[in-house]
Amino acid sequence: MDRRNFLTATTGATASVVAPFVGAPPQVGTSDVIRLRSGLDTLMALDRNRGGHEGLERAALAGATEALEKQKLGATQRIRQRLFSVSADYTATAAWSAIDARQIDRASQLLGRALYLAGMAKDPVAEMRVWNSYAMLAHHRDEYAEAVDAAYAAQGTAIARREPLYSSLAHARTAIGHSNLGNRQAAVRSLGHAQEALGKAETAEPRPSWIAFYGLSELMAITAIVRDRIGDSAEAEAASHKALGTIPKAFRRNRALATARLALAQLHQRDVDQACTTASTAFKLMAGHPIPGRIRSLLGDYYRDLITLAPDATIAREWGDRYRSEWSRL
Image (tube, rainbow, N blue to C red; front, side, top):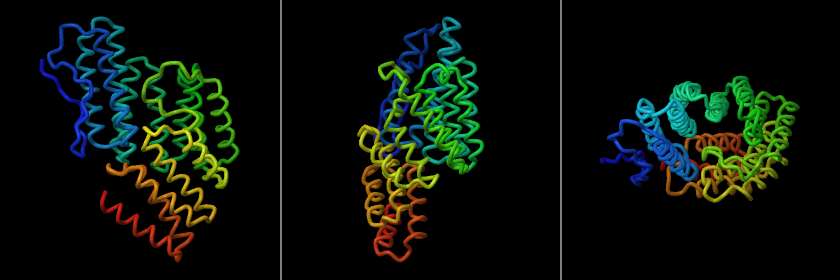
């Protein structure tokens, strides 16, 4: 039978993601669900390394379409619901890629589709994933009240009420929303809830690959964001160092984001030389690939703060030259 590649990377490298058979059998069963889910794992591994990009989004949408095509042939209602779940996860992956690439309008459309599919699947994990992404999307739109509302919706899902790891992520996302609104007490309280829940999580329990990024290292990275936003830059720097000490090397995009956050925390303490050195490391971490939109935006925030706080510093001018050079190259 013919095989179809889900993914062609935009730089010319091709990543083959579980290639479903085009000529589907009359009925579809568990093996098809497993095969499609393994494709999700491949896409999430690519995301950890490169971040969101057009090739990843296309591959995820192809996977979602394939799952829905097979759903029509499902042998049982249980299999049909599981395939709706797979399609929801692929669509949420495409939406996440669009968020990471800062393709905000497209991400919003995809999240709406993913939430519908999660409902059809009766899948609380997929539902929680979508609300988590909605909170991030609202954050990038500067719609901070909506980000808090979406994070509360994530907290309210059945999986977040039942499993501490998901609860911790939802509370951490809520903390970011509160910090952006200037609600210091609520932000710190949400961080406390996130830490408490994470301490109760069963680390050995198998979970979907999309949430593999979340653990103590990511909570420290989120803590750095929250603390910097509420004016605790020294605490933000300490949290960033803890995050970078434990984020796995394979999570290259996440390490670059945490590095840029560390640079911001240092800059906000007026340690300009060290901040510029740190911020330059983010470029090195993503060498060989275009920088995802979220990192580009964060480095843009850093540069704006840099020229505001130290407009005449030599190192600030030198970093600005490096920034513009990297920006034009990418």
